[in-house]
Image (cartoon, rainbow, N blue to C red; front, side, top):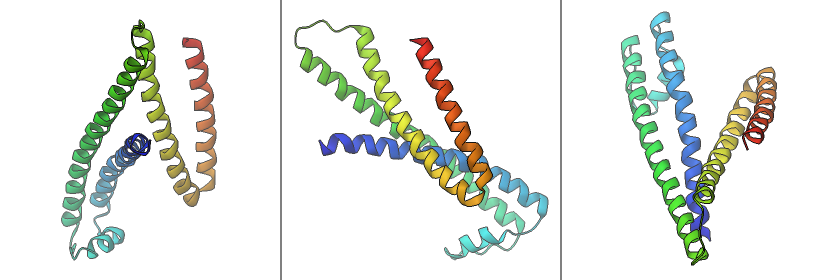
Length: 170
């Protein structure tokens, strides 16, 4: 039982990491453009790199660091996506094996199987989005309350519209 839940937890965790990496992949190029525009070394980056004994002396070093970080982030996103998809595939295979084992000689419809597989995808995606949104909301609330209220209302409207679309498509 614990091992079965562990694979779901790992899959959801990897999904959350992928979402956070996607946000960072969007923010790093913007930060790099800002560096070029200002022409000065950003203290936060200098402080972060000083922990690793990396000294940033000029703008080019800072830009080079962010470029390397961006490339590593893109590679990380690809790897996270591949691992997450493999784990979801294992979950689906396990679910199909369980269905065929329990059905014995009964006929199983194609639609039933597809429904079960889609259910697994929706389960993982919903929990991933929920945890990611919660983390994002905590950080945004710490930054600005008005933005967090806008995000909360956006999430509520998104949920209502998505539910109506899913209900109308059934």
